[in-house]
Length: 619
Image (tube, rainbow, N blue to C red; front, side):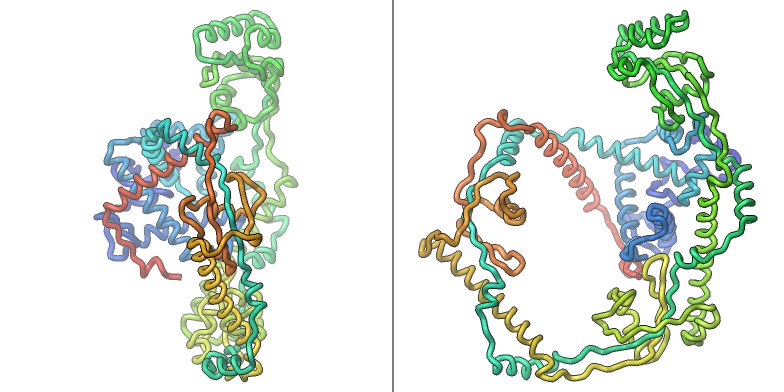
């Protein structure tokens, strides 16, 4: 299995080659997901995914995310969030993989090899490069087995999807009806009752407000306030403060230079002749063109005589200057066999027949130390800073876990700055304490009542804080005067909401009963889904409503909309509609996707899927 890659990568220590047809390889392809364990993350029928297997996937997914975001994940990418989206992906992948196998779909090892060999990231001017393959994968934390599993899973899932979506159809009548619906015109009468107008028309007496206060007095307490000392550890700050000498830079450069990491790719100036289409006539032309060029005909004249490709003719056969990976594989694979001035053999592709000649070649030279100095500094500082950051997590966690150290002692032992907050409440803070989840973890009984240090609170994967209480102000009863403005706003909102709803419902009922008629307060709209002369929210409501329902009301974020569809006009002839086929293609694609999702949902609904909620819900 995959022996060609294994032979090329013989320097790698590989103890076991995974049999793709025996085990379900998913996203990152780690391990055999059939093994049983009491500590499970989820189960599909008799197939068990353990927590350790899921955590492996989470670790690699996190590494990929950090690489894509340059190490700065958004705050909402918590451990729980990443764990759940990884679980969802694994679940879907395993189900599709098992289903594909059950119905006999296969993805041959040769297809996996072809994709790997032809991936530009793994190629240089000589073709597939085993060292480049290895370094590119390790750079994102993947092993060769993992990547091969990913290619296999992607391929077999695409086969399954294609088998379903390629058979999706829309009948001629459906096509006509859908296009007519897309381009129909609606005539609408509508009126918006403004919440603010209703609110302004209301007034409250002092007695009303005082009575409300007396009835709900227990609700009007000042919030508990607390002031904390805390340490704030940011990996990016640590990285900035890592020092690096010229000697270290030079040693890294020399080591990587010997490993070939700074080699620039060679560049080629290329002549190219294309005879389009795979036909006998095209084959005859390309053979004659090659024979004539070998006999002394200039490449430019050969292009003029034999090519039927407009771009080739316009450029007189000059393709341009490229590095190997910039070219299609069917051309780049020929470069290794050509010297300057040589004419290639006939190359066949899906576009037709090609000839290629290297006019000039510039050998790639290694980048100089000055060219890569900043990259070396950046990589070194990031690596050293990241190590120091994770060491700090362990050291702070160790001291914090014992509950024998207060925050001042932890700060002193580890030479960390100790900061102080202003007073904050459970519902209001500032800076990093502006996040709800941070305040939730410092307003606990352990921190407030027992004066313990908080757990490590992760702002994101690169930053955490630990806090301890300095002072506390308990809630106190608010006076009527202090509460009056809050009470007035609350009572006006409650009364306005009740009144506007009653007004809208009464007007709707009167209009439908014929008691009231359309007047100047109603506006009119006439247009299609593409109309821009009306608010998009209103348009969405109008076109989602049946034309035979009479007057309706809809809540528009406290305002109320009253409307009816007076009539609908459909186009007579869809042939007169511009871009009708574009919409038809969109509908067909949408139906294909819908049918595939329906297929997946039907398959998964028949499986016994058990998720370890207690484990998945951990922070």
